[in-house]
Each structure stands twice: as C-alpha cells, then as structure tokens.
Image (cartoon, rainbow, N blue to C red; front, side, top):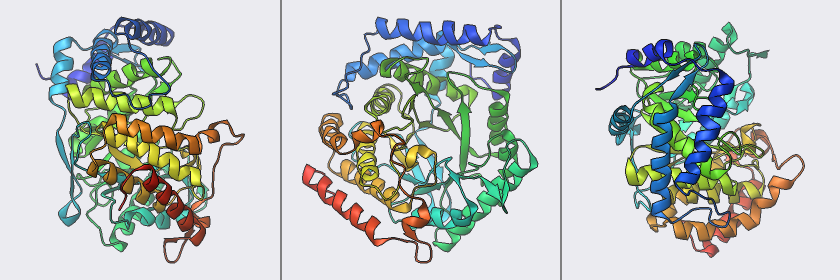
Length: 458
C-alpha cells in the first residue's frame, strides 16, 4: 500500500500515545543501544572513513529495525507515527534517483552517487542557516554563485531587515524570508545564472516563512527548502505544514535530521544508526525528495571532527550499497574564513563525503554560528570533490589523506573560543567580489600542500 501524506497526518492523531520522556528513553536511547550491540557496530577513531562493506550493511539493517520499532514522535499530539516493514521498504523504493534542480541553461540533475563514484558530486555552495547581516548578504551569496564549479546555491538567514531584528513566528519573519529570496534572485541575475537552483528560505524559522516564500517570485517549484526532523526522530506540526505546503505547491522537500553525535544515540555507532533510520522515516513524514546529511558533534558542533565524518561516511555507504538515493552532505567546519585551518577542514570533509557517495553542500564556516565565510572555501570544496571523483578515490584512500589533514587542524577543537576567523567583509573586496590578497595566498598555500599529499587538484 502506498501512503498519501494525508494518511501520514492521520497517524499524528490516532497513533499510540507516548510521553516525551518515555519517547527519548524507550524509543531512542535503549533500542539504539541494543541494536548497536546486536549488529556489532563499533567506531575506531583511527579509521575516519571505513572501508568495510559489512559495517555499512549492518548499520542499514539496524536502522531499518529501529525505524520499524520506534517510528516518529509528534510532540503536538503526543502520538507516535508508526510504520511497518512493508511501508518502510516501500518508502525506500520511492526514493528519487535523479532530481532536476533549477531551470533553463542553469538546471542541474542531482543523482544518487556510488562509493568511489567517478562522477563528480554537485557543488551546492553557501552557508546554510548562518545568521548574516543584510549589509553584505547579497555580496556574500554572489561570491559563491559566481564560482564556475558551483552548481546550486544556498544562503544564511537574515538577522535583521532594515535595521529591525527578525523575530520568528511574527510578521518580521515574512519580511525576512522574502527579502532573502529577492536578494538571492537578484544575485543570480547579476552573476548571469538566473536559473540556478536554490535551497533557500533559510530565514524561515517557522512554517510562516515557508508559506511566505512559496511563490514563483521567491521560491520556484524548481527550488527546495528544508523539512526538519528534530532530535531525535521527532516531527512537529510546523514541519508537517512545510511538507504539505510543498507537496501542494510542487517544490522539492529536503529532509534534514541533525543527529547529535554524543547525544541520545550515544557515540558515532549509535548516531549512524539513528541518522540512517531518520532518512528512512523522512521518506514519509518529510515527504523527502532528497536527504541532507548533517550530523553534528554535541560539543564541537562541527562536521569536521573524526566522529561526525565517520557517521557521514558510514551512512552514505549504507544507502549507496542498500538503497541508493540522493544524499547531500553539509560541511560545517570549526574554523572561519581567513584561516588555514578552515581550508584543511573543508578538504578533509569533502574527501570523506565524495569518496562515500554524497554531494557537497557548504561551507557553514565557524560552526555556522557567525557570518565568517566566503566564496573561496566553496570553490575549494568543489575542487576537492572534483579531484577526488576524477582520481576514483575510495574510502581507504580518503581515510589515509584525511588522517594527514587532521594533523593540520584538529587542534582547533581544544582552543578556547574556537577559531572563528573573520567576517566576509574582511576577507573579500566588496566591490570586486574577489578574495583579499592574504586570503588568496592562504588558499594557494593549502592547495600546494594538498597536492603534495597526493590529490591532483586542477
């Protein structure tokens, strides 16, 4: 039986009742712990990118069992949306293998990728969700839209409109999200790529913003937006509204589950099971057209830690081997623009993702907490992804390279205050939209180092 989205909504009213505390313990913590043990899933910090097909398969099997056992919790109704084995399997079967984003000459086709796939990943550039000042928002997004390797664009969120702070769930959110989309569309026009596909409405903290953006002058049907699942395996009515609105409007839904590595799922092993199960369930509750892979470290936030890269690598491999689908993986480094470490972090994370079957999105520099990013690291992300695919780099080769790169940046995780770098207007010339000389020199220095490590970057 193929479920409709209305069938899904019915389950928010008639599913089993559960308290939030019981959900966390009985549907997440305990079953994940048992499944990790049952399927013998373990993490080795010296193997950031495993080359172990059996491990990937066991993570997939454990995630399937978790998805059937636990389902998804709706906190608004206190009900569990449950799905049986046949339904989960049907959901896996309806996952898209190809998806056209954008329009006209700027259209791109997202495809499911394989492990060590020679087809280069698509490059989805931007600092998704990062709070950004309006003063240089447009210049910032144009700095990556103009890069030749970039295929698709995203952006941060506006924190103020005309000097007035944006408050979620109020009329100011409508102004913010529509201002964001106007600036994005104008940016695309100025760089000569008006049809480029977007993942946008990042200023939409609530469903109000998504509703305000769903118009051909703002988000087109060839664009996408986020439908989030909360930690862990939770969907609220607001995100169900986002999904329903997109289904009726015809826009693409990107599922987003930011599993906390070190949270309710425990370490990387349990977090990988949770992340994979979230994708399986998002096929229904988010009505996903593609999946955004964005686990985060509970202490460091960044995706460039050993633990988070391991989760990304194993989950990508699990789906590439067992249920191919479109996975776009976020890169959120600890470091910000104007630092060597940012470039090393991007190189490591992009290698792990590309080698295991993902597309690349980013860069959400400085933990995605500050507007300290630019188009240069998006260019670098693309160069790494294309070089890795061209060389046919697989998990074992990627792991060897990443271990060498970690030596050059891992110390930032223990620095007081992190390594935030500099805001956009201190690394780029706002008139020419080119990197300032010192930032360009850093980029050339890191490129030479990575070439010497064995990656043939053009």
